[in-house]
Image (tube, rainbow, N blue to C red; front, side, top):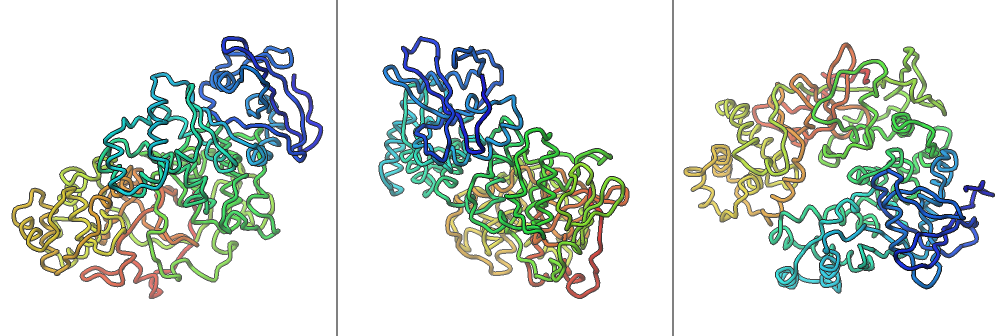
Length: 603
């Protein structure tokens, strides 16, 4: 059925012929040059089950398709006139990897040139579409203040969770960002994007939704991410931020986590960062669907490292609850698994002295590759075989070693002082109460608990972790220091009284919300010298906290047989402090020259 495309700018569009709702789908493909501005609508949908159990009649051929594609075409078919659309499942020959690789490079133009993108959310299985879209129409008419929003929410039935899977479609992220106009279709109902966008904006700009229906607030998160991308806010201005955002979305082909994002216009210089030959990362990343997923991921990491994007790659490293020992042939720990959601995100939380980034060193002297045959490979080489590289040689300075960790924090557990945080304090910090550095350690714990969001660390911790609308006054804190339920909070309250560190916090409820999100799938740790921080769930006692070349964020490294593996980024509160009473500053030795950085091997 598929004829060879005539030129590098040739695409196929699908003509869907009119028919009653119950008739078979009949359509035809037409070749056209995208430079000639053909008129069509593009369809965005979730591939779903890959089982080709349904069919359409295309150019007199019976073509097997997925259920999702079949349902989408049935929904957009008109009863009285032909409709011309572009839909990847039929307009691209999916079994021709070479054609697919080339057509993916045109997809940004396909979605940008379409006069409208139709977003198919799926069948309305439970009859919720009308209510959900009515909510969007009600809340999306105009900007609302908090009181108007509260009244509206008491008068409507908020149901937006049935099509949760669609919001987590990775392809949707790219397609939304490029579209001129968006129309959402759910069952028989439809709504323009402008109403959804305004409704989400109203809900996100106040704390009414969190207070009124906290259990539903997470349902808005994927929609708000798409809104940020579409409006070129937040993640859309950062190349790596966009890739990280994409990790929260479903994807039928994991290679698209790199390839499909090539068409997005990210507004930072890192995307255009060039290698010594002058080739940007975007230009060097050519879609090739003949390559296995691991090859694509490692190749992308190598090319980013060649361009000095060290911190972007190292902070993207994500493992599950365990990091297995490395064996020859395994994917190296420094190559991110882009298909794992990024829950251990620690950027922008440290203010390290520039000397800690080992300035004055080029990419070539700060980091290099070693091949499987122990050959040292130059970073300046234009081509490096990804599967022949397993070792990074990186300049590093070890700050300390982890001696104990809390249990892994789940979303709710982080905000309950009687569980993980309280137990960690009771076992590993309270025994230091008589030590000269106890106040400094408690300060670290408080800052870590509030995750660097405010300079009023003890006060923030007291209100945030307590998860209670305490009266914000010295008298209330003094009362809790004597009679409070939790020993850890009593200790914090006592420190507040002793250090006169009582201050108001703008909105404890909002801080509390943020803490649950930041703490998810992380663990508190304490080091040999008493530094407290937060790290990925995969960390374990004996792991090192180290600074690597060209990074601001301390990394967790695991020693193994003369080399290291990257566990992930971390937050060490003490690094941000100018001085610590009773405890040496973790950067003292490095800044004084007592600690000299050395080249280590990472696999």
